[in-house]
Image (cartoon, rainbow over all chains, first blue to last red; front, top):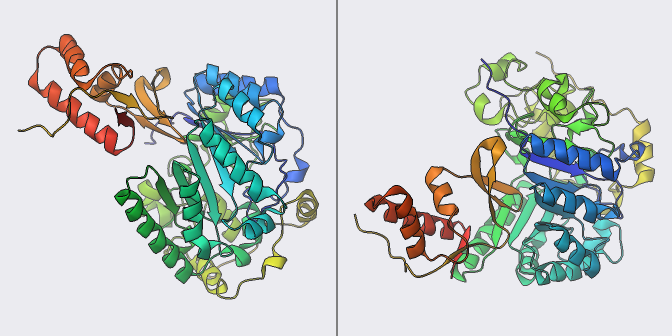
Length: 383
Length: 94
């Protein structure tokens, strides 16, 4: 018997795929440039009404860069009045004091700002923008000044991992409440750039050790700052319980209204419903796409008989698809997967990285180029 | 069993950015914070309803006892709750 379907407690509203930055590890779909029919203000209000009715309570405003939407303040105010806890997940680009003040007035609960690096030159090179670091630094100061809880997020990869100590120092200087040191996950643009982004095992071990030393120091000094270190699954032998399970608590609505069980799922060969055509409750409870990987009936024998299936649900469907061509397969991170050699190859390749100049930056031009390429993987494993 | 040390005159307040609210869909009280949520059990929900930035620990004990009777465990539950909540940074004790 399968467990009852849970509530969509977490709604991620990807307001737009537009973004002034060009980070080569962006998790947006590589073909994002073709989805430009953004939901209107009124359509988002309708999504919020429906989701709140269904029990959604955490709401993330994301993108792209959500600040590109000039109606962001209206959307925040509406969601706040509905009882959502509202989170703005931003690069800080497009923020200024007047918007920070207006968002506060609208009831925004929390701001997460992402940095590329602690060093302005590295930061700006990764972001593909000359003034990004300065802007982010100033905005972080203002976010604290306006009394928001502040999370600083760093996507960590081989280009910035050796500066982890300076990164943590910067976060302490900016008085972050929480710091996410998230080692790059390989979806979207990051997957295209894996050989320039995946750190070596030695780099990861060192970064984790330094993070632990800072945790100790923070405790001794009684500083209220929490360091979260997200280990890359490419160095694990057991897969992650991706999204806490497919269609269990997370619901993403993409800029064009496509509803997804996670923001990376768009690349799967599945027809996902759109909020413009289908009510959210039908999408969540009834649609074949949201039911596709619920429970364990869909699992291959290898996962069906695995004692860990209740813990990790066979890992990530997108990673299984990207690496093996079949989303039903066990996530190749799993040491028992016949495709695990692909992960081992990626680890080995991290010793011979592609240079920074060869990274593929996320921008409309590259997106259109990639869209023409067939991205379906064609690897096979001999029994 | 002896109670852990806690000054009863201090006033607990939800930490900045933390919000306590009732969620009809879950039929439960929850504590919301940046990108996260904790579903509270019955006793934590009862105590949480009295954390208003005015009431001291002693006031909260008195109020909860007024509802449930003078049960000695109430005091212990409330003090333990405060210590856990402080350790997890849910509340500030001022």
